[in-house]
Image (cartoon, rainbow, N blue to C red; front, side, top):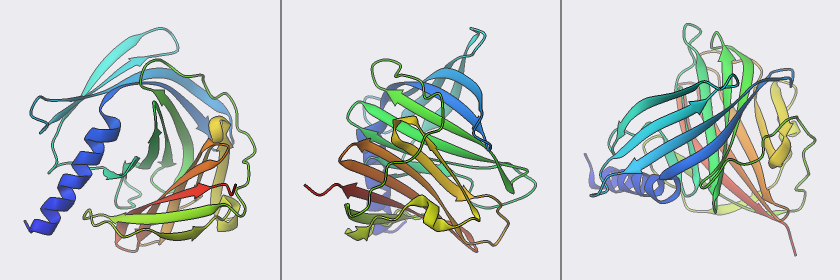
Length: 249
């Protein structure tokens, strides 16, 4: 392993530990592709770092709609086997290749202070968007539940910066970015807006070898907006871009 790759993996691990270790109390709300609420549960995602900082243990503790409780262990993570990319406070993971024989999904999210949100896009038979899972979390207690889809607030003329991490953990320098609405992606993209300033845009249909992006927006504050973009080339997943926009004073 090269020194550069090792340093990049160390930074990816450091961001995981810095922003995401803890017990995240979340409302998990699932919507159909038509915008109908189909399922709502609570879950505590627990990421526990060991004493020497080399391993994180991941448990999920679910409470279902009928009151049933269940805990699942998802493994011990270390820096060399992470499946997720961590770019500052943004994170993302999911399938790297499109395959009609397997379920295709992706999750992208952000942390801000004691809050964390993420959105999961799930494709039926790996090719058509089927449902969207919105996860809203707090480090101390369960937040309010999102109950409906809403209209997005525009960020026209906001000042933006952007940087990218590749699939092999290489991080670009920051550059200026102009805000564009999700609807500008066109009719081939499925776009939905939720309460808490959360939005998703991704292709309605995907196929192997297709170039596309998936985008998650979070208007964290009236003056601050974050956007996470997963990019897929013909060969598969290639990078995660974090864009941050600030409303001019």
